[in-house]
Structures are given as C-alpha cells and as structure tokens.
Amino acid sequence: MADRPPLSGTTHAIPQPAGSTRTRPPAGAPGSPPAGDQGEGRRAGRRSLRRRERLAAAAFLLPAAAYMVLFFGYPVVKNFLMSFQKYSTSTFYTGEAPWVGLGNYRSVVHSSVFSKAMLNTALFTVGSIVGQFVIGLSLALFFRRRFPLSGVLRSLLLLPWLIPLIVSGAVWRWILDKDNGALNRFLAGVHLAPGHPGWLVTTSLALVAVILVNIWLGIPFNATILYGGLQDIPEELYEAASLDGATGWKAFRYVTWPLLRPVVSVVLVLGVVYTIKVLDIILGLTNGGPAHATETIATQSYHLSFQQFDFGQGAALGNILIAISLLFSVVYLRANRRAVDE
Image (cartoon, rainbow, N blue to C red; front, side, top):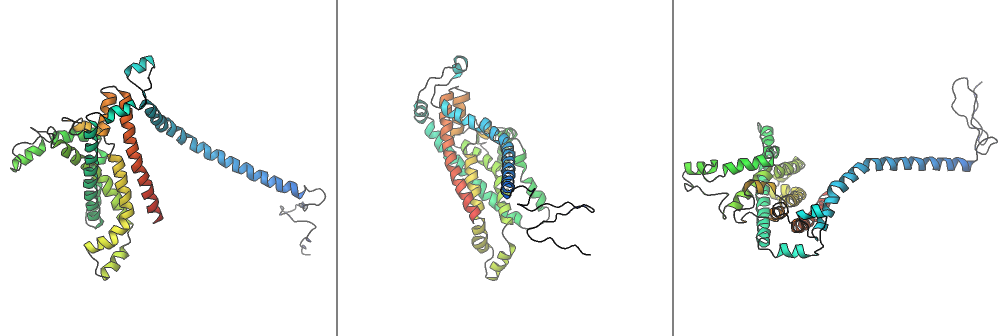
C-alpha cells in the first residue's frame, strides 16, 4: 500500500534513512520548540554569521591599514609638523624643536631660489609630459598595426623601465658628457656640432637635456597605457567609418580620439603627478646645477633637508610640493570617475 502524504497541520515528514521512522513534529505541536523561539534562533544564527564575516574582513584589512598608517600616514603627519618647527641635526640630540609657525614657509618662499625652482618645475613638467605623450601616442598607434616582430619591438619599449634610475642617470651622463660623450662625438662626426656643446654644464642647455632624458624614461608608461586603450576600440567602428569615407586622419579624429579621450585624461594627470616630484634622475645628471639651472621644488627640498640639514624648511617645501600633487590627484580622481561613467 502506498504511503499517504501527511495531512496539513498534523506532521511534516522529514527525509530519513531507510528503515528510520523518526519525524519532526510541526511547530506548535506538543514536544516541539515554540515558533517564536525558532525565529529567534535563525536571527541569532544570521547575526553570528554576519559578525564572523565582519571579523574576517577586518582581519584582511588590518595589515593594509597598518601599512598605510605606518609608512604613509606617519611620515606625512611628521613632515607636516616639522614644517612648523626649527628642526635641525641638534634636535636629534636635544629633542628640542622650537615652534616657528609659518616662519619656514616664509623663508623658502622668499628665498632667491624659490621662483627659479618653481619655473623650472613647471617647464620640466610641461616639457616632459608633452614629449612623453606625443611620442607615446605615436608609438601606440604604430604598434596597433600588425606586422612581424611587433611584439618583440613592443617589449623593447619597456627597457627604460627595467633599468634602475641610478644606472640610467650614469649612462646618460656619459652620453651627454661635453668632452667624451657619445652624443657630441656623433654630432662632431656628422659636422652638426663640432664645438662640443656642454649639455649638462651649460645653463641654457642643462634643463633641456634633463627634460629629454625624462621623456625617454616616460615613453614606456604612455605607450603602454595608450596602446591598451586602443585595443578596446572595436574594429567594426573603423570599418563603418571607412564606409562613410573617414579613413586616416579622419578616422583618428572621429573614432580614435573620442573613444581614447578617457584614457588620455588619466595618462596625462598621472604623468603630471609623477613628473612634478621627479628627483633621482635630476640629481644623477646635474644635481640641480649648473647655477640652479635645473633646480626644481623637489631637488631644492632635498638640498635643504639633506645637505643644509634644515629639515624644517625642507619639510615646508615638501608640503608645497605635496599640495600641488594633491591638486592634480583630485583632478585624476574626477577624470577616472568620468572615464568609468563613460
């Protein structure tokens, strides 16, 4: 005889192993827990699960938060406080750092080098960004075409990234040397500059030489990011544009540039944030000279802190640089958000 289904309101059959006859009594039946207790038990279980999930998330976030506070938060706060103190080498022994308020800021702003450093920073940043972007975009468009060994050539573009900056600085200093440099030997060999121009020791050429080297360093970043942006543009759009007569320059103007513009804005803003604080390559090539011809805000802050040991003024100049970088960081975040929305 077939088993009859349980009647509603009597008992609920629970799958049991073969041979078992145990059943779970319905809620409210004699011997079963009250319905209110069952609901409270489920809510307690969910609260316990959410608590465990929050604890697990906090355990994963704690190392990152500790790292950020220790290596980013503390130096920034310490640098900010130092900019309002007379902080020198004697402070390390005495522990005394008198409060000078805005005195350090007034000293660095009214110094004879500050205006020169600001102008050099602007010229260095604008020249580097324009050169890196134009050459990087040209290379990205070039490598978008398929041809033999394109992958090998693209990988060679990353060489400036693979070489340590101190090594790059030493090699370029030899290339640009006035007497024995490879560049001057080549120019003299083809009778373009037999006078051996002093690329790194002449005030009118030193900043140009430093900008050219920094352009060489920044080309891989620009070319790589822009090439990745070009890969996201569907090929069908170019085919449709060609049917309307938009080829060559017109295809770039009406198809490539509008779709690549969000990537371009991110590349430019990130490039500015990175370039404005470049220090190592300038120190390696000219050390800010000759006669402050390549002095920037970053190199001046370094000289004040680690050559003149006036850490207070160096911190003040560093905070000015941080404020400028923060301004462009805000621009980057807004550009990035707009790119995501588009």
